[in-house]
Length: 127
Length: 182
Image (cartoon, rainbow over all chains, first blue to last red; front, side, top):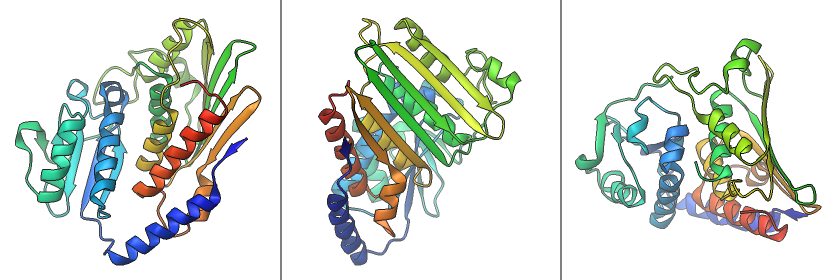
């Protein structure tokens, strides 16, 4: 039977604890990848992967990632919402790994909204 | 959707939206009987019998932002195309169980795809929900239980990218070891 190696997990846990001790753990940005049927079919999982590896590569701990459902604009999926603390949320449309990298580097890290990819400004409605 | 792991991601996203605290995902590959079974069980809000009758209708949805609901119908179609079967059982207030059977070697059976990635995406999006993923193949099995991982992690969040990377690698290795479909 294949099972998770607890010793390896412990090592990584200790590393993460040591890294976190050096940083202030405040949340600065919340990124939501829309993960409804439409989003998934359009490639949201791949966009999510890119976002996660960008975060890992940049070594930031103040960006949190979450998923949400469909907000009714299925034809414009994959959609990603970037909410920088104290600013209006920005919804990006037709996302792909390349655009995700650009949004991460410019918007999430440098505060420059990537206007050409923007679908809307403001909070999305669900259900 | 081109692979079964995408359907799993979709259905489990629904589970979390139904307020599930614990979702179990069981994949069973029985190559002798030429069968592939995927069962997803959650402890979410569940559905009453009237709603349950309509879930496989693509023109039924509980959402108001659009008028179609394709998640379950597409999963069901994928099963039927591979000479399989599909069922949804649910009780209001108790949870939902989705079962899909496929003929393993059927030419139209979608590949299982990247289950490791599906699990990591779910954990990243829903760190508070507990997921149990079991995969049986050729008498061998792989188990991932986030309850166990969270216990080990203590104050480190499970959705930390380093932890998620470790989990993804672990699932990939585990599935390879048991010779799972991909």
